[in-house]
Length: 90
Image 1 (cartoon, rainbow, N blue to C red):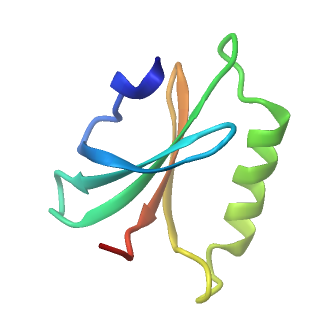
Image 2: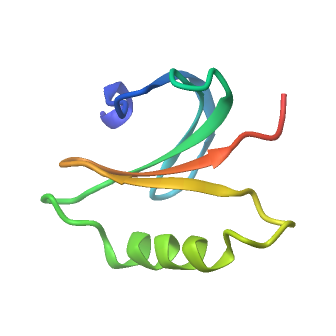
């Protein structure tokens, strides 16, 4: 299972949500101490799926919309793509 992986600089706390292609983790930035959401999209055979790439592209275009959770960063690792959002919630 890909739940044991975490990008450097972050501490995963618990699962905030799950979908068909990703897990969203409530996490803390070790640099700022702020709560963030990490969306972990696993790669298949080292490649991001077309559906996941579309999601990344859409999030990039919508990141300035004040009604959508702010996308802070995108990390591309060997096994996953990580979308890092500000965390608004309990």
